[in-house]
Image (cartoon, rainbow, N blue to C red; front, side, top):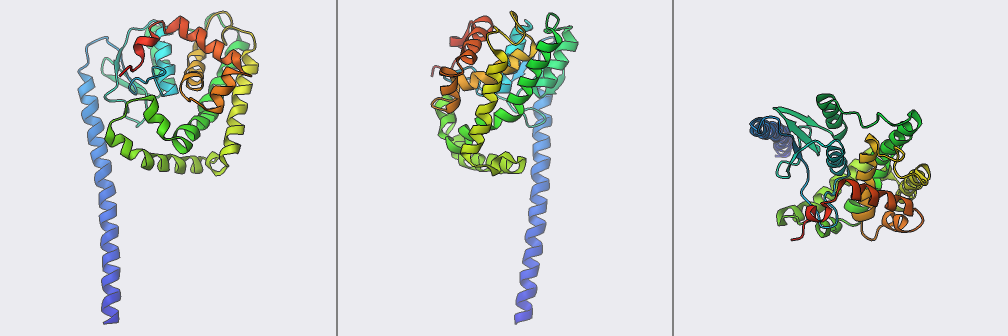
Length: 283
């Protein structure tokens, strides 16, 4: 009886393992199929029309994604007409934003900019010195790859309800927020920064803003009197601190000790987002 019981348990374990493996394979197949169908749909987009796929509009700023704000600001800086799509926000790489142009689909904001620069012969750095370009590049990399974890910590780990206050979220998505928060926490732990305490994470990421502020100084833009290409990314990040994280230490810094960052953000907003109010979700 005991042996039969053990054999049955082992059989059940093997069966569960097989079902789990098959389930993962089926899920991956479904995800690939879904992406292929989505891309097929956008293959039929009107000729010579650029489609910007990103997250839907928010209540306090046009986009809750710093990368979405970056790419949309770039399109305005480069004077490239575009159509906004918020239904298929996640691209073929599972990231946002992404673009469609004449049947070509490009994901990742930086790769999108490189593609468009080449396609339309755009150079937003033609009047920028090597030192200015290097400073702007360093700030962009720091904001996009390090300070970004401060946004994640504040929005998804400690204040997950902030998301639903900033934008209208379908009920089903609200129910998934705790699950998504757990996933992101595990990602932060795997990356390394999630192994630190919240206080330590904020200390590290607040230092990033202090560095950006010091490098900006009294200049109008990181390109000098005129913005350079990386200004769109820096604005995309800082716009989250100024308008997208109410009550955070980042917002307090921009309103106080680091006010040059808010003044810079206001200049970028006035120059490229004159329709800012009409881009907000007023519902």
